[in-house]
Image (tube, rainbow, N blue to C red; front, side, top):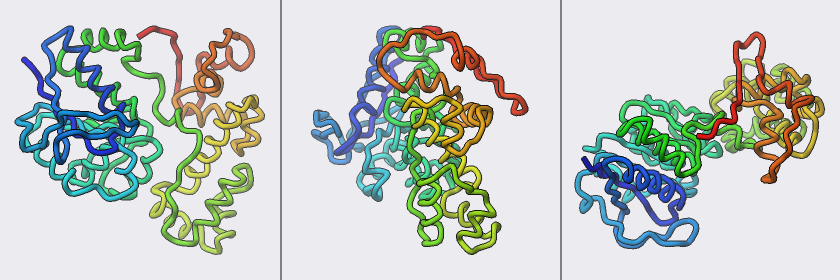
Length: 348
């Protein structure tokens, strides 16, 4: 049985959001009953991607016919401005009878605008997760996930995570063996180690609507290691701790303590990539101790400081060093939290 998959594209669509999932489906079709791909755009014809190359032969939703799966690709403008009505109309037509509805990256903004994600768990690119949560408060945004399934809806993290999402769809349709063979052919993981937060090294905080939080946020970002306890920040803002906590929840969707910890973690990530030791990164970021830093990495990033540095510091292959920090963190067992993070060098 052939599965018809409708890709929703538009002017400025992120090219890899379309090409990555398309190649997964193409490779799957060589191993099992194939997929028929249909490119759907609001006006049909040729669509120019974010990288410049054009997608030709797109059709309007009314001409696409029934599809089994809808995949809404992303684009930067979806997070920056209201979604156009003609794009919403195209998605609305295709999703009415589809068995599955998926989004890649900021394509989640389109599904959320249509109300399809209300009351559901969803994710998007880490850079835009806070914006999605604030713009659509009824969506339960999980910023670290690579992809999330809730009912017939599947949303993925940013850009290349569309490959992860599509592998999951192939596994649904044809089983783990087919999906695993596709992953091997494409030289990608079946399931990546850690979540997408590990790819972020600079916190992106939407500008607060009110004036009270702006100087506080600027103060924390400029000097994460200073005293940013709730009482200290409340005193600086001349409000009660309870009122400040309410403002953080309303404006940023989190608590002051969690937001400050995330800022400090981002600073620690930057310091590690600049060559600082774990101890130095912990001290200068404001996290304090090595153990606190390791706990924060395990909790938020699903990795250890040394493994993070190995993955993201350089594209050059490094010689294995089994001493010091690296040896201590091959398996990071975080006491108290019951979190164990193990790393394997298994080829997918």
